[in-house]
Image (cartoon, rainbow over the protein chains, first blue to last red):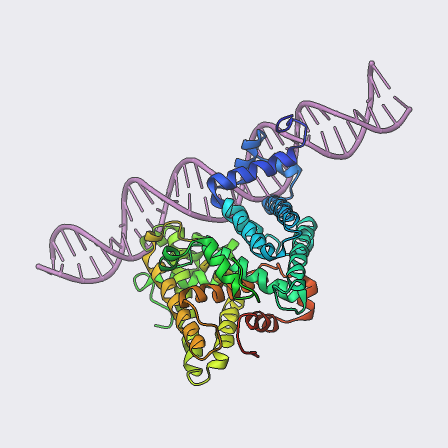
Length: 202
Length: 202
DNA sequence: GATGCAAACTTGACATTGTCAAGTTTTCGC
DNA sequence: GCGAAAACTTGACAATGTCAAGTTTGCATC
């Protein structure tokens, strides 16, 4: 019961879990269907009982990532119900930490697994739900005057872009050494967010 | 002389060009060394005379992309020497257009081809040069009061993150339809940049 | 409880691909 | 002209995504 009873049981989830594990250990280059199958203790074609192809597995792994990220941000929100000043920074920081904890999974989540939205409705729905979650955070910040007012969906796109961009550039090693030597990630994040806010954050 | 005289000539560049072409036509999934070789009219292992492995070819394709982007942005800068108000938006817009003209190449450029900086010094140098180029744009904007003052390298990271994040999210289909239906890309870009500026841009 | 069927899984095969080792051709300095 | 380095070809191998055919298994129905 610890993991799952293969040979029947819920292989589907075992495969996703195996994929996440391989992704963390070997990176996206090491993620193959056959390795995932072996890790789960089944034959190389077994995944095809549950996933149409490799893309579908990746979509499932991504979807699961979105769900976990959602939960983590919900916890941040719950912890800051009465202290909205810190909500923005802490939410962004949680996002960043999620990305740095599992860089390859994070990249997968935001690498057009889709191509055709309709193909993976779970994925689309999950990612939409996460967007709405951020919209709520942004609205909270607007309502207490931390962020300027304006259409909350557009403002969300702006703030999200900023944080996401910083995470991506950092993850891909695009921030020059000269900058990395002077500031750590959280300092860059706070500085960056402060460009947007009406009050000084820390 | 139009393209190159294989069988001798500069295959190296022909391979890069072939790679760019395939990337544009079939996307990153269709980019294989063998296809690149065939496209260039040589045998399947010929690329190994010029590139250590597939990663090295990708690094070269990316590097070439950085150089082209650099040139395009230089043109924008030259055209706005006397009109710094528009420089920020136009530079960002050029960046965005570059990304949307060749989405797969753009993604490659910002997908840790590296893993180990030292391996592709050309790539690192090119990307550093592009960063410095943006720093100069940012400093110009700061000096005329469009952007707040502050450490220009950090400010560059902030502004770049914002634009890059927006491009990435849009490229990967992460911007919800509800938002895309209301605003086009340039509107989102201008709105987003306006969150940072001290004067209203258009 | 036996029967039969659909779902879950295995086996075996094939084409594509990255990569290497060994040979062959070409170029060019001397 | 000669010989060696560079540029390329050929042939091979292992890993991989995918499919077609079979086999097992659980389960609903009689």
